[in-house]
Length: 91
Image (cartoon, rainbow, N blue to C red):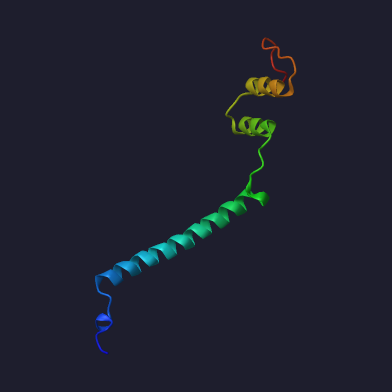
């Protein structure tokens, strides 16, 4: 029964099939790693907790993105205190 398997080879079709199968396997491995790291970085439940606006405001002030006047103005708005834009900021 020699030759029933094309002499033991699949020809070009076999090579193409093997290359595609390996690409699918490696793609699945990489996708699984990405999903694991993303869900781990997001914390429990898969969702990131939103940061409080005051925390963001403090970080921007600390980085120097906004000055003291703007910091106080925005802080007052967050706390819903009346804002007096003409008053000089306390030192």
